[in-house]
Amino acid sequence: LVSRKKKPEDTIIDIKGLKIGDGTPDFVFGPCSVESYEQVATVAEAVKAKGFKMLRGGAFKPRTSPYDFQGLGVEGLKILKRVADEYDLAVISEIVTPADIEIAVDYLDVIQIGARNMQNFELLKAAGAVNKPILLKRGLAATIEEFINAAEYIMSQGNGQIILCERGIRTYERATRNTLDISAVPILKKETHLPVMVDVTHSTGRRDLLLPAAKAALAIGADGVMAEVHPDPAVALSDNAQQMDLKQFDEFLEGLKNTPFVRV
Ligand code: PEP
Ligand code: MN
Image 1 (cartoon, rainbow, N blue to C red):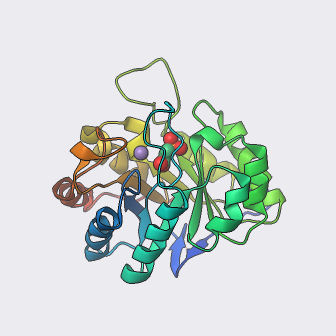
Image 2 (cartoon, rainbow, N blue to C red):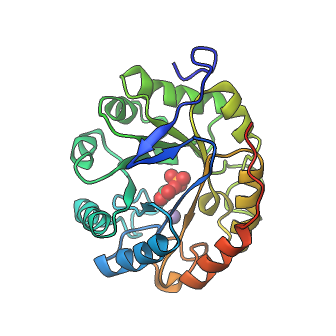
């Protein structure tokens, strides 16, 4: 169902009036984790002031260590919903268990399925059963074929509103947190009719690479870019090495000006 052979024209996902995949790039910014109302609202204000419409923030955090911050859970979703209403933004957050998909529908505009759950087939089926856009991230070591099949799981249940997100894969290279597979973008665009975004934060894991990675993503034809922004990354409860503070966010956007955007 996700194959371009089945449907030659691009799928455009409507998120609160924003059209993802319509030929102009869209952006998702926000903190790694929802930590407090004030923290999310501070970022929301900056995102809104720059004219963007989508805000991210993790409430259920799939952390490598069980001793790391696990997220605020439903309380985090409530904070996102409040901020979304106050700032008229669309909010995106990761859901990690099938049972929470139904709950999330009331709070979120987009449900994210994270890299660690790309092959959680029960979660994919639950995401396919709701009428809500899904941002599906590529698995930590998933092939493009496995990634496409994960999207197929969602669509096979009836939900065709899927955004694919390349977020880097595990390779032997340690200079970056993951290896951004930039060629996945045109391949996914060619093989499927779905919009493709690139998460520059989790792929590179390096603040100094966010801008060049975003430029590359847009130049190669991505429909959008995701990056993490936090009011004070040094004290962030997760991912403090790669989130941008508000000044770096400004510089990032300045650097992106005039970046060519190519349709493939
Ligand atoms: C995230 O976007 O918050 C996240 C955990 O990303 P990933 O699933 O790509 O690691
Ligand atoms: Mn993060």
